[in-house]
Image (cartoon, rainbow, N blue to C red; front, side, top):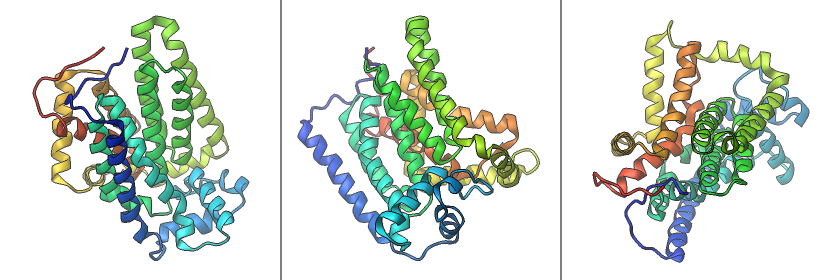
Length: 341
């Protein structure tokens, strides 16, 4: 049975919904295109010259610096070979495509999670116009891919719980690809997998939890295999470039503020809507709120226990959770919300 609430019971035709989402996607393309041919930045150049220009076997087995977003580096190399060059737009093409595809993906996630096509439309337009997402969609780094696969993995979990068990495969694949792009994606994998496992066990016991356990275990094992060759380098890079929470508390607080600005696009309105959305989760205590809490809390707990956090942009996969939270309040500011399931 669906676990999503019914929010703002408006009626829209499927054609109208698709038209709004298509409009958001077109606008996303228009606002992202101008940045594709701007001068290459230092980090982009380093990612290309140091990793993506190398043979696949080399770039996938090297992690001496966090600049190597493994899957994205491989996508950059593929783009270069497909288009026969290393022009700015060629190197940024994978991030651009990922950024644009995320728009309809975000619409699907918000619609399924909140039980409202209007929520999907609102979330899609916010993603299309989000300053940080626009920037990373025309930057030759892996953050746009991280958001894309993060949204896909969460959407797959929601659909799987709505009676489509085959989407556990989608969750496993998408969560693995997010982690293969940037290691911090593993927190999303553990958060969604852990929440899903507990929820499935409570609803259906061992039988209900089995597909979740299989999917999560498969994704974790795939991540281990993807990083086993660079594990020592990954650990060394974390110690060198990570933010030391206890020895450098001022830097940690500055990073927290920077991360909040990154996720809200520096918008006070967005920040306010997110906080209101979280208050709605506390009031309603439904499945979507629990998923948002898990996705936010797991990386926070991991950072507190290890004493090391990644740079704010490494948690950019939290953007879909931010937009879903803001959409929940924006489409229905009422105090009481009807629920199904």
